[in-house]
Amino acid sequence: MSVHHRPRGLFSPPSPPFHASLRDVNAPPEPALLPAGALSVPLTAPPGTNGRTDSCPNGEARHALPLFHATLLQYEGSAAHPMQDAADADPMRGIAAVADGVTQSAWPEELARALVREFVSGMDGPCADDPVRECWQQVRMAWWRAVTPRVAHAHWALRRRFAEGGARTTFLGFRLVQTPAAAPGWEFWSVGDCAAYWFREEVHLVARFPEAECLNNHPPVLQTLQAASDLPPIECSRGAGPLPGSLLVLATDRIAEFLDQIRPWEQEPGFWREREAEGHTGFGAWCRQRQEQGQLGDDDYTLLLLRFPAPACEGT
Image (tube, rainbow, N blue to C red; front, top):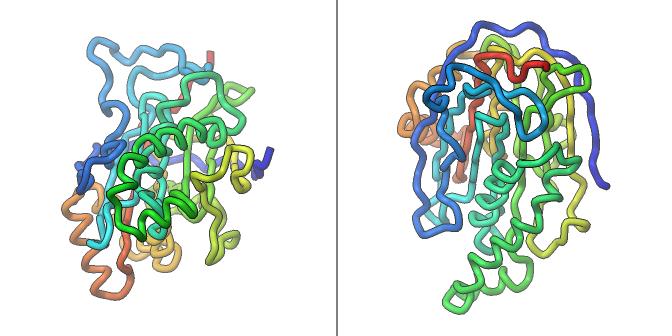
């Protein structure tokens, strides 16, 4: 099984919790397999639960309240193609993902949306050793069903991409798990150049996944012509440590490149709170301003911010 494991150490004690809510995102410009930016479940606790816990699908104790609060910010940066970034999250089960469809492929937005949705909603059994490969066949079938009726009426260039390589996408997934010591644990799964940033007290970057020095100009991708056994190596990181009050940011490739180069949280201590407060419309204005300054190019941008207001899981 082509999985690389990179254990991480414990995090330092986090700051007090800060609650954030989900922002609206763009709907796709044409009918799509999955609605762009839609999350799997509401971000509020079911009525009448009063904070009780029950059993998580992964076998751990679960809060009736969300394990994290999510803010999804997206900007469609190119008029030449539909929004090709995708994101999904299930705050009640502690799972989230982002994906970035490759422009020079056939209907990559469909593949990206199908992949994040299947990764997030498909984790219903015990913890999978390799969840990306385990859900890949369902993702491929969903993509083929969605796009095959369109091929005959598509532009010749799109038909050629369909025949030669299908769709391609990068991917980054996150989930909370229970460690053998009944402590909160976490996993990252990655193919390509999407990135995750874990912060303590807003400005202290604790970890980046995958490590920036491991990236290059030709990142691996997931491709619909590949069976699960033929997928490229899937980068994996597992660890355990305090989660309360920390902030986890999942980013697609170009906005991740900006974060690596500029590190705006060091220049603006309130950078992340400002992005959450301004919401989707404000994030679009912020992206356009950075484009005018030459800091961002002509691309789609996605940030999925996860805040952990309480311990993720309790021991039995």
